[in-house]
Image (tube, rainbow, N blue to C red):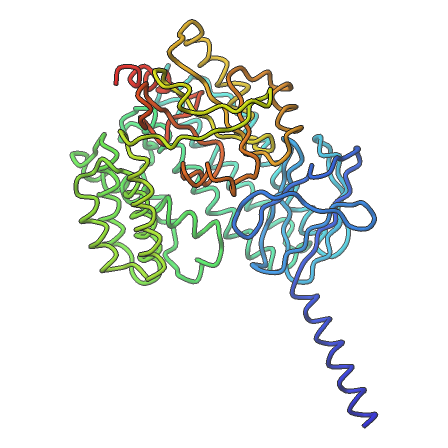
Length: 471
């Protein structure tokens, strides 16, 4: 009996150790005085959530699923990622003001290498100074930009190889895939951005064409377990197929977004098989569902569901279609009532008769704050004396004090409202806000003019607002 009891206790102890090894923890010490809920990371739903503190007052996050993975650590506007695999007990000390953090504990070598590679990558891109803007000389600008993006991505892979002896095999394999497809993603994104800015797709392509990019892309279902690869293959591979196709058949190039989406879907359907095809076409179907002006959308959707969608994907697509139709151009904008800086309730309907540029943001969102500092002031200046245009800012902050501080720090002009509760607030469901920043234009009649409007810094934004005034 005593022997059995000892064996049972040993089994329980082994099970406990095994369970601990299956998860990873990060303990973060902020050298500056840190307020509660000042350090954030992403949860399993890719939503930013505050990191709690341990008994010693340090921030601690435990990851129990999805390993290996990289997670963000965001403090104010400063953010970097750490890599975690099963059993890691990483300790981070940082001022979160631009200084170099120190890492210790299991997983520290991976963290050090990843931080340095990321820092060097960002430094290379920040030093890039084009000799010409894309307006002055598109060809020179695009070739210089393409070259720096390729060099920066290649340098990440070279640095990874140089540090292979320091890092774990899991880290090396994961980052090799991640860095490769991050680089390809960036190169294709810049071409897409030039096209979105109104440039001809053929003119936006690099002189070397698409051959090198297409040769580098692997169509391998096993790689779908890497998030960066899956994101690339579902979001950017159809774009790559389109660019490759029009470089061979220039007459098929189209300025119409709907036509491009249809062509990308058809090309991906032809070029892929199995799980890759299902994942890619599901993403393409989601993209097309956003084009609510398409008269053939409903027919396409049902055909796609019948041919390719799983039950879960079918439910998702039909739900998206229903939601998008409620936010389609010309639909009544959902009314809401939120508290302003004075504690007064403000309704959307209070601004009927005016065009509303609706900006969803949060104090912890770096891109949101950057737009407010650089894009918003210029946009506001163009409508400074126009009483028929309102800039309405809706923050999804959980902390009203941080919301107010961000407004004061950035000197954000406009009408400010707080939708406390983050992505769980009903307004994010009503307006289908899956991330911030997000912009919506509402016309003078309280109708949706654009449920996915351009950012304040984009050239087309003033024209879109003027067009809404005419409707």
